[in-house]
Length: 195
Image (cartoon, rainbow, N blue to C red; front, side, top):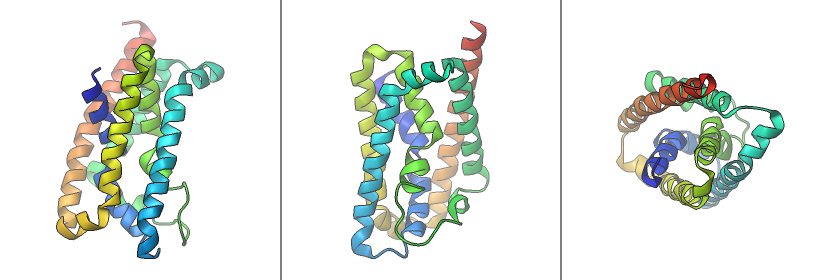
């Protein structure tokens, strides 16, 4: 895997375009002056979580005696379910029953940015070639930065891009994620059976 493909994969998994309407909906009752600060804080929390799992994920897997093939299949299944949700019904209604007030960690940082699929992806990327940890760290930070820019300027995007356009982008990203999810599942099965 190249750095560019890792960036693309992580960007797709973090899915900023689908998260824009969710972020706007969850932050609509928060004063405008606080919104950008909250988004930056949640982005930093998500980056910390992803870096933590990227660099300690293999140790956690060993401690829990979980094989890379199991992680690949599980991550692929979760990613597949998320991608189906993106393609067929959108993701705005996932977090409709969240408490009022200023969100902290859940659901903005986790699971919207650093969700199960993103965590599984960073662990798998690192596990496949741990000697390239600098490359994978750069890929994560670049993908996270692109996602962050979109989310920080989400209000401006929402003024210029219609809800239908966001839905179309989300469905396109869902189709790409479906392909990646199936590939992750197949890779996990191949590793499990030594194919």
